[in-house]
Length: 289
Image (cartoon, rainbow, N blue to C red):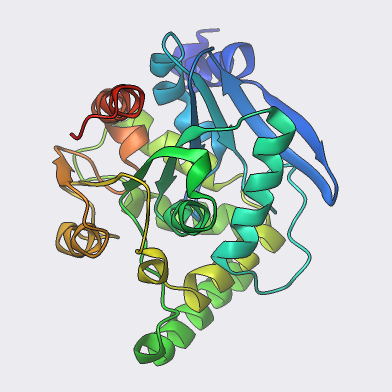
């Protein structure tokens, strides 16, 4: 049997188990699932609403020779304990992140937030700036928590929860994963995006929907931490113009990742690795990009 032919994800799944395996970290209010590779200065990776820690595999492997790379499964994702409140804010997720960094002995890091993970990352940067040397936002989701977006937020919330109820996680992954990558994505990239989405859990996803619809990224734009924003040139979920507007609000440099859809770390891992390597270098030297 040819595993590569029968299962195009077999090489990635094998590498995931061998080099970026999940482990559980005990916290006061439960447990947090993380994947970790490498040694050196810490870089912490936060995934989006339709993904998980495993989605960072290729980027983590490429960075592991120069940094301690940590990716979490957000609360309610994987084996991570959900947050106690039904409708958490970005500050609630950021508080859990602080507990995790304490448990891992990380005093300072580069923090990377992709999509919805950008809300948690920005809230953490605003609340505990002394713990970050740099903030990187990849295809940041702005959220619908601003008063003027309340009606739109309610519509998005209703649609997402209805889709979950009608299709279930597996059906949702089949229906939505193609939107995560560009139309030029490889079959393996598309399958990897779907595999990661199919691992979601209903409770964690529902809490993340509440975060998306109840909070707002620009609420956390007043920062004392160097920040940069990047977006896939073919991203159809967080559009380049919207991400550029986020960069302006954060007074941050902005760049496009050529050929990447929304799941940029899956579709263009080399380019994302390059951006994060530069961010690590800048965090160590204190220079601007």
